[in-house]
Each structure stands twice: as structure tokens, then as C-alpha cells.
Amino acid sequence: MEKKTVLVVCNGNIHRSVIAEICLNQELEVENSGMDIRCISRGIEMRSEKRNMMNFPEEWALTKPVLEKLGITVSPNRKAQQIDLSSVEKASVILAMDRRVLRILWEKFPSHTFKMRLFSELVGKCEDIVDCKGKLEPEAHQQANFRIKEIAVNGISFLRKLVDLFSSESEEVS
Image (cartoon, rainbow, N blue to C red; front, side):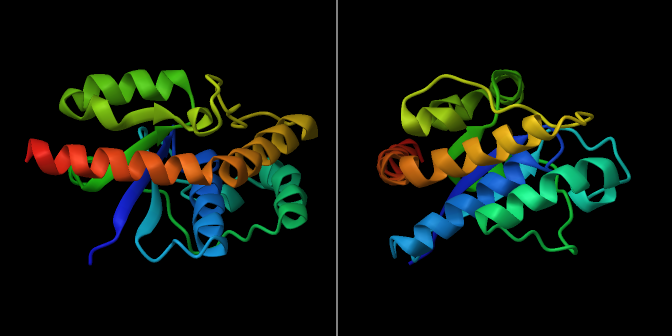
């Protein structure tokens, strides 16, 4: 049985979507249901030569202690990846970290909008996860990372329901 894929998307696949991917995969393992679902992440923009959050030293210095507190480890070898049609087609559910990213996804991949949601919708909210790019306030990094973790922990059962719903819907469309 092939694993179903949840795709998490932010601007550059440097921070928010990476952390959300890690947190969701951790929660799937905790509830022992990661055997049939895997989370991956991508970015809508690839403008930077710097392909990993560790390549942004000032921001990494603010994010690293928060991630350590949350028990989240990001591989230094991790590289940002840009979203493409193949990853969109393979995904059962696509989660955007903010409304701007969601609008861009709708425009780029209009035949897949039925399976696109805001990440915060996992917990019944319609809120953006703050992009920490260029922010040097520790509170911004703490807030974004804690909120991602909180949504992953509290939204995992709803995510499973979405995956089941949209997996069967995309099989019917095929």
C-alpha cells in the first residue's frame, strides 16, 4: 500500500513548511498512523541561493533555541524544494501556511483547489502562520514555531479525516 502524501507549502521552503512537515510527521508517528501517511514540504518561490534555514545566521540564532525547546531537529543537509505539478498531483491534501500562498496555489494549480487548505484549518481557524523571513524579533520566531507545533498536535486527527476524504475524492476524479 502506497503512502498518502500531505504537502505543506510556504514561500521558500526554508522555515514554516519545513517545521510543519517535521511536526506533522512526528505526530503521525506518535499516534502510530504514520504508516499510511507522509508529509512533505515545498516552496512557491526559489529566489535564494541559500537553501536551508541555517544559511540565514541571524534568523537561525533566533529559531534554533525554540526548535530545541520543542524537540524539533532540522537536518543541516536539508535543501529547499520548489513546488511542481507532480508533487501537487501526488498530494491527497495541500496545506498552505498563509492566505497569500494559498491564493498562488489556487492560481497555479486550479484543478487541485478542492484539496487545498490553510494549515490553521486543521484546528478550525483561518489564520496565517507568520513568515519569519527578515524578522529579528525573538517573539516572531517563538510565536510561529510554537503555533506550528500546536496546530500539528491538535490537528492531526482532522488531517487524517481530510486525507481520507480527499484521497477517495481524487480516486473518483481519476
